[in-house]
Length: 251
Image (tube, rainbow, N blue to C red):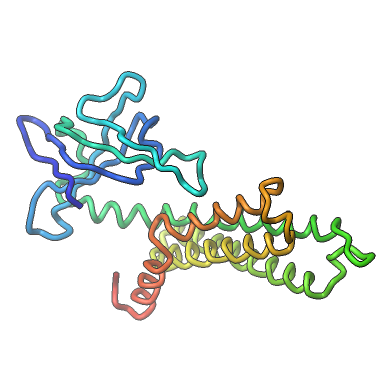
């Protein structure tokens, strides 16, 4: 992280650049992380709440690019430049140096909606595949009568339900303030997003050539599923978190 917030007068002046910022071109309120010191490691980072005026512009704040993504196109993902963005002292969350801690605690919660999103994408793909298999006729029978297709649908349904139940459990653990929130949240995000990728890919396969066209929504769900394996921490990061927590090594 290179963006810096320097004390000036009764507030801060922020300079830097950020990328992959969701809804940066339409948001009225933004959570911003910046360095307020040097040499303290994670304690250099502080968090700020920034009020924006997307209609009339905000001095020191500029959106320079909206990414052209393979999926999740309804959510704008932008690059921004902060050039002498001035913030009042009241904009800081907590105290200076608490930003990294706040970010990590936020991820425990924000990974749960991504897990739920993965379950929803996978469920939608499963329903599309099952409906198509019962309507598509080959060799005088609907393809749902073929054991190869039945096995695929069975595996997809089982994987979706496993991801759903783990997501429910992790969410319940979070609501109850359980001691393993970080690990269960990472597990739910990992399993649900991997399941979404696997199930949507299989759904495209069940639809065959039709699955490869944009006339059917299976290909879009497959593209959407890919994003869930990346944001809120890649699934490789989730595996590191789970292993460290499970073996008592922190992280």
